[in-house]
Length: 145
Image (cartoon, rainbow, N blue to C red; front, side, top):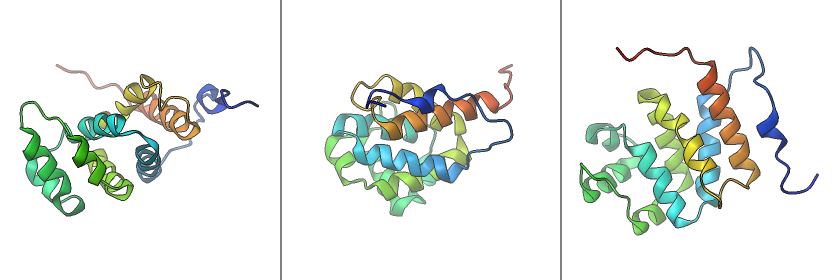
């Protein structure tokens, strides 16, 4: 098998096989660790969107609240130096929290990662995308009325 083969993306969903939220968080942390600064910023912006300031204060000693407030509320942009200061363990904690508030925000990482030529080729990213897509497909549809 060569490095371009990604068999994990071709696997069909396994009936009855649930992926734990913690496994997803760990994989996001690994992807974050591998990501270049621009991709780290995009990952953080996606994850911070659904959270309010009070929620962010409680996560990772408030590091994300300061990032959110510094960037402005309406047009949040994570600065490169902010992303550089965030450690993979902080991202794992953030993802675990975000999944309690909006699992769709975490599942939305699949599109973001698939669109990144830098990250899409890594095995851990391929596995994460597969698990996020499987989880999203296994969830019942919610009607927005």
